[in-house]
Image (cartoon, rainbow, N blue to C red; front, side, top):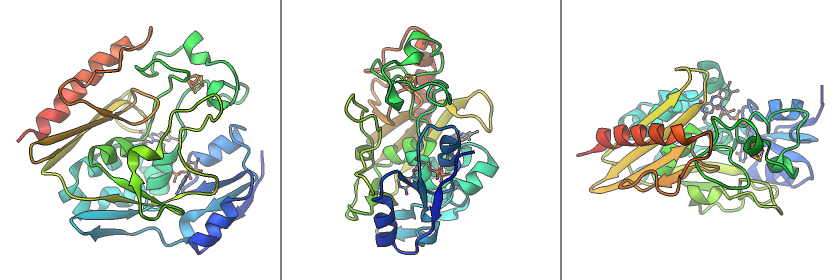
Length: 293
Ligand SMILES: Cc1cc2nc3c(=O)[nH]c(=O)nc-3n(C[C@H](O)[C@H](O)[C@H](O)COP(=O)(O)OP(=O)(O)OC[C@H]3O[C@@H](n4cnc5c(N)ncnc54)[C@H](O)[C@@H]3O)c2cc1C
Ligand code: SF4
């Protein structure tokens, strides 16, 4: 078993300083980080537990809501105001993972979790996304992977990301407290930088802000089981007046906005994933029907 140093600072500045050290990693509930560490996927020498920072509140802000980075998925799913005003977020938070994981997993940890790909998670393989030169999925089994060709065909797994993208949320970070669009938290990995997160070294998420409540919203997902199962695909829809926003996970490397008039645009499918186009089309149709005025 690999070991690492552990710190639980009480101030954002102290956490940022601790995270600026090489091989230091932010931790929320640890449900993804610790398994990655034990499998040697990431070489964290120290973990900085963010749960002592007091970032665990859900509070009304203007016409919207501010959600602290370390709010658990369970607390988000239980919040009455979120249930009433942001149905898509309530539904996504309540559907993710399992009850036990939702009690531990945090909002920011969920948004920043690594992709789910059985080659990426294998302790003895170093695939392209982990810094190697081969995408094993493209030459092997990619039945559950994405619909978008690229260097890495794994899929974004965060149910919350789809809901928050549809809600046009922003993310506050330790060095950008004024907030950035949620979409800008993510980036395409490249040969030079294999990260799918656009965070500077030491930078971490402090809160998510949803600026206003939609007139209607809904989340549709399909997994192999009802619980304890990642979404094969998940589609979030939100309607603001006559404007529709549609977002998906499970279909592309990053959480992705879809065109409500043509949800499959830009997602041609791969040799083994063409079946997912039918799934995505069905989920998008259901989500849009639930929010239509
Ligand atoms: C069996 C199983 C099934 C699952 N099913 C689902 C599912 O259906 N849907 C779904 O959405 N998820 C699913 N998950 C993933 C689970 O929800 C995540 O592991 C969890 O949400 C991560 O939250 P955490 O707080 O434990 O993150 P951690 O494990 O603490 O961190 C995860 C990653 O985020 C980084 N991080 C944490 N906090 C911050 C921050 N504030 N700023 C920047 N980076 C940060 C960490 O460095 C790490 O890289 C499943 C997991 C398992 C094990
Ligand atoms: S799909 Fe991505 S994560 Fe999976 S093997 Fe290929 S490069 Fe690695």
